[in-house]
Image 1: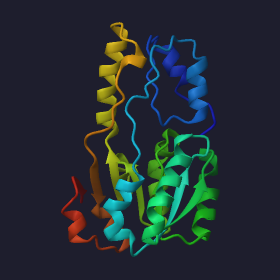
Image 2: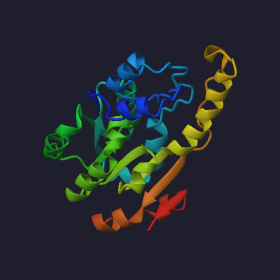
Image 3: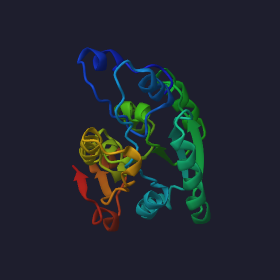
Image 4: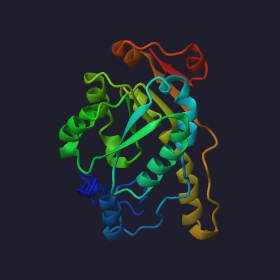
Length: 230
């Protein structure tokens, strides 16, 4: 999302001296961090993820019967187009079609969703972006209203009502981030610290949403889930 973040005032008010910025921050938020009057000790970008291949692999038992995916993404986030390209490259040979749908502002969500529904997709993929994830509850509700199964590569999305999520836990990611912050505050150079990939990928399935959509989740997929919301 390109609008200025409402948390700017709160960050200044609490007089913090370290700002940790998540890699999926939208361009507007990154611009704010760059001009923030608080000294920026560390721009957190050491824990990376690229989930398209793993996500399609996990969902394939289900989405092979729902091959057209509308991918809701933020064009201002440089990681999102790469995710879409990878998703299309992996899905193409499997007969999966990816329809990119850009969401530039929270104010556009209803109109963008109307455009998305008009394309008659079978499912929705919410591409990870801080602005989009802030709208997880609204996006999940709209998907359910239009009877569209929805997915994300951030596990918390299923907790907000999405059908499934396969990816990393943000809680785990942020806890690990504190290790890097401490190292840098202790004097380590950011460029000397290793880049890490997540070692645990979780599958979360929301059976309440599945029942509301009238869907039966294959037992083979349920058996692989790390968490089932009932």
